[in-house]
Every structure is written in C-alpha cells, then in structure tokens.
Length: 77
Image (cartoon, rainbow, N blue to C red; front, side, top):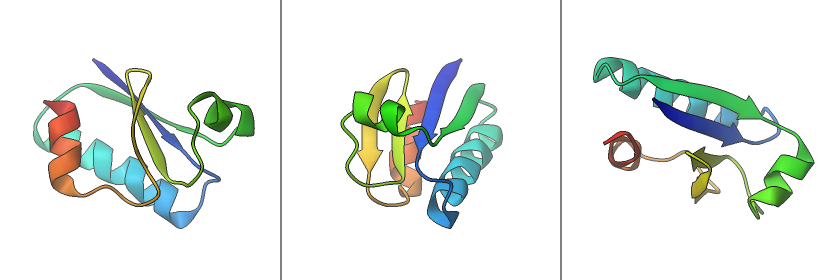
C-alpha cells in the first residue's frame, strides 16, 4: 500500500488533489492511504515552498499545482 500525503493549507486545490489521487487509485484498484497535512512543520520537513504538494512513501514528488493524471498514474505504478 502506498502512503500518500497531500500537503497544503486545505485550499480547494489541495482538496481536489487528494480527491483526484484517490479516484485514480480506485479506478486501478490500487490500495493507497491518502492523508491531508496542513501543519507548517510537516511542509518544512519536506522543503515545500508552494502547495499543493504530494509526498509518496515519504518522498516529495510534486509541488505548486494540481498534478496531472499521467503523473499520478506514474506514482501509483
């Protein structure tokens, strides 16, 4: 199971990012654990300067925008 964190303030883009990741994982029947993190110390830990940011299995994969479908599929692969 992949552990995916969406880092951000809880803005619309952050919520949409988490929903999109879960939707694509469900389509492919890939088990994921998606959580949303808004704590500044968590964002600093990963060096995030712009949100939404996505962390997959403790590795920062994306930040600054809603990721596109192809990126998300690659993370789930």
